Image (cartoon, rainbow over all chains, first blue to last red; front, side, top):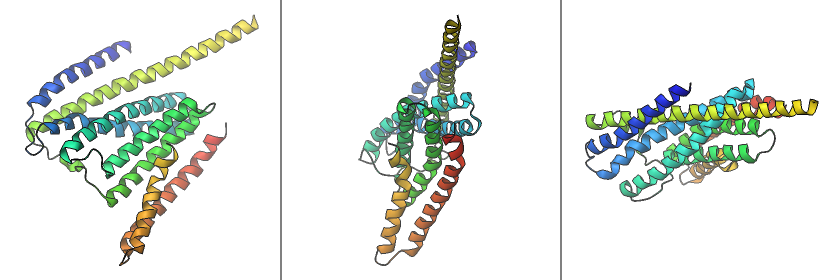
Amino acid sequence: MRKSFVVWLGVAAVMFVVAPILVVRAPYESTMGLVQKIFYYHAPLGMMMFLSAFVSGIAAGIFIFNGRAAADRVSLAAAEITVLFGSLVLITGPMWARKAWGVWWQWDARLTSSLLLWMIFVAYLLVRRYGGPGSDKLSAAVALFGMANVPFVYVSVNVWRTLHPKTSVVPTLQPGMREVFWFCVAAFAVLYGVLLALRVRLATQQAEVERLYLELDDQSELS
Amino acid sequence: MLLYPITIPVIIGGVRGTAALLGDPPDVAMAQFWIGLLLFFDVVFIVLSLWTFEPLMTE
């Protein structure tokens, strides 16, 4: 198991070394020029953030109904990565928006739903950390309800107003840009998988240490 | 952090729906859309709440 981690981490590292070179070589977008290149990192990060949120929400649902500790660990790991990737999306997004739209922030559908998704998972981590006993179940509810909430936010703000480039931008990318874009998506997907697996492993080991510690405690009380 | 993200679709729906209805002339189709969205939100969240209450609140 440990070996495959190293292999995948190596794959991710190589991909992230190659990605900037490909991004530099990709053709310039005619109207936005250089600033468009942030898109190669921003969009895959956004995709992975939404994927991670759904992984967390579904795992939380499994945990609530089956009580499996492993599902809870996956949910926690995915929630942390959602917050991490979400922070990066929310940093790279305004950098691009400042140049392309002339403003740092717009209350547009995608921006608002990303921000709220990020906030929900920050709330998840807060409940988890400071919720006291039983916080694992409560935070699982936050993840599940948060996940159910996102489509509503998206639809409501989308009808209200929208400015963000449509998702249809992706399939209509120019040939030179398309490969680079999907390469970046693949790189982030590999990174996401490795991070998730590592975080779950850490949580499993923490649980194991706790169990052994309690066992030791019981034994010393008996003797 | 908890309340705001979850309630935002309801707030937007309520505000925009009321605005559409009180506008001159009233935009009935838009108001109906928002009422529909609010109802759908209610259905999803009531079902989820009832469904998860027992496993969450009983130890």
